[in-house]
Image 1 (cartoon, protein in one colour):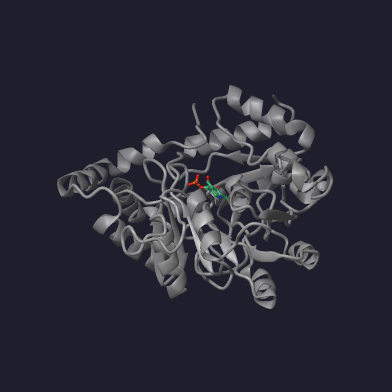
Image 2 (cartoon, rainbow, N blue to C red):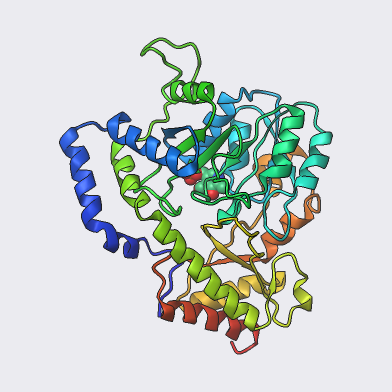
Length: 389
Ligand SMILES: Cc1ncc(COP(=O)(O)O)c(C=O)c1O
């Protein structure tokens, strides 16, 4: 039985009619860039995320870039972010001539460790923003990071690319926790377009206005430029797709949560521990994700387990042989990437990040997984780890 990491075809089968009707509507309107379809999506996403405004753009990467630009980050500034994340988090900082300053993660949640962030911030001289990531669909704790940003009078920008619909333990939605939330509509995200796309959320009226101007080359009115922006607009066909999918998102999220609970129960029953606990003391050398704080909503863009570093790649190959797709998010911390060598980090600087990069593996979690597929994944992981491979 095949179990791909993600099966967008299965999702499409369930929404084909709605998607075709929505695309036809755009074709009939002949309005392709921004326009009413994008405005309708912006209103729906703002409401969904508990934000006053949403501003659509061309990708999640551009959302990060635009948020940093709107916050006034520029050459020579420092931006504090995790190293254990997708490249765009720090790439957006570097593209503005600013310097990513990395802090380590909490090994249980994989999100920025607030204590580490505070230590790193105390050594900065030009810290202009804090940019944590809601990694894998789990909201970071905005309490201590928000306090740090407030003390330093700098904005907290959320990289919420993987976390639409997630909320923290106080029930506050990702995208409503700081100066701006940055979301991606990359097809593999929980709310994906059929191409690139992204959106920002903010409660700040002025920031929303600046973002709207920045995404059209800084022009307002047309052909009059007080700012240098970029071309980063969402097109109406993508907005129409995302609007259809938004209607199904909560049901899909429940499916992801159900699958995660099923994996958790099966693996814990077999002797696994939780991420953050020592692997070698577990009966089974496997750690499932840390428990979710009461009241928080984890949306499981990824379901990530840990195994001992020297067995991770062999487990991956074993699962691939049985037709099971997996991925390593992420094999290197950003502080170890060649393009950031000039930042001067060395191996061992961010131990929790480096350990996660060596031990983690994402298993299929998409909502359309069948019982038989879940059983296949669980059985195969246990076969490998119990030496019945
Ligand atoms: C954490 C994170 N940040 C930023 C991005 C960038 O989004 P996009 O691929 O839409 O540019 C992604 C997604 O790929 C991501 O996972």
